[in-house]
Figure 1 (cartoon, rainbow, N blue to C red):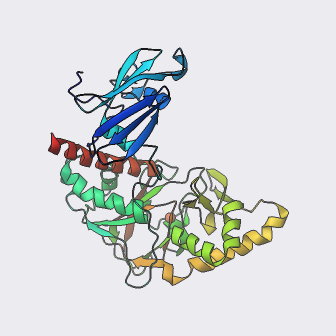
Figure 2 (figure 1 turned 180 degrees about the vertical axis):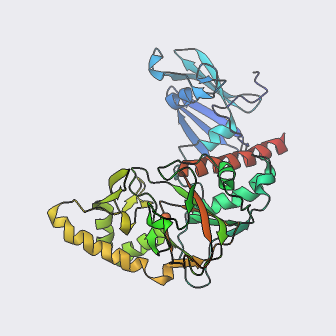
Figure 3 (figure 1 turned 135 degrees about the vertical axis):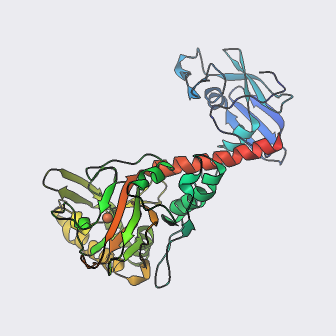
Length: 408
Ligand SMILES: [Fe+2]
């Protein structure tokens, strides 16, 4: 690697250069750069040393770190810093006497000195209400399985779908095959399925000897699936193969919108539901899942992380004696909000539809249907939120790669 080509970055990503390095100054523990647009960024010497992309820091085959900082003879200090002919930042570190180069696009993308919210979601989260005429974002996905994986044609179908799921928690794809089992191949375009005791793919249809209310024709109240697990599945996919029954409309609500409404109208009830740990239990004939968790959880940033709501999967509340009545009061306030039609969207599945939704955010429900009026057959599966985030980051990487290629 010479100084007139840009150095490798410690990842597999592509980093377009939106601003050039203009000037650099340093002290032993700090490098300060000024960019061509006037921005000033500071980087600690220890941070730069750990995040170098060279082969003493990163295994070139895996792009994973091999450097153990504590094995260095002393705290890395800067003895020289300059901008080279390729526009990279070159830093010489003592006591190793090692000269390392940093890609300006990567440095700028990881500018923690100026970052306002480095853990911001990939897509802005927008809560939504329902009501008559409202429905999910709907996209034509016919031909998805004919595209090559990771191709631009696949991305054209998947990218807007991923954005809807990340931002609104829900998307409906139409025009997909109705072959039983085809959901596995469709889901794989995003990531691996999460297997559960109901199987990798499960069939939602009325069946004799059901092991879940889902497998009957009765109405289901708004719920998230499998709240009885420590990690309840992040995503659910429901793929319609047949639907000729009377009734059985799908109902969906944005649990984050309901939680925000509760926070606004009854802050005490909201606080109670983020604190009291309910029991979620699914004690079936051959399995026995139990987990304790608050009904509404916030993340470290104070943003809504998940709702865990399924009246038919709640076990007996086991909490502090004085919390019992406030907990039930808060629960009933939430339940009344859940019945408010202003929050719900209703739609009828058509064969070839696939609804993908965030199972830790959206609640789904179903009207009762006439079991002998026709056939209603959905196939479903679960996946983690990690998979959709990873897939969307790959979309973003491909977009950056195209920008880099266009400027070479
Ligand atoms: Fe369900």
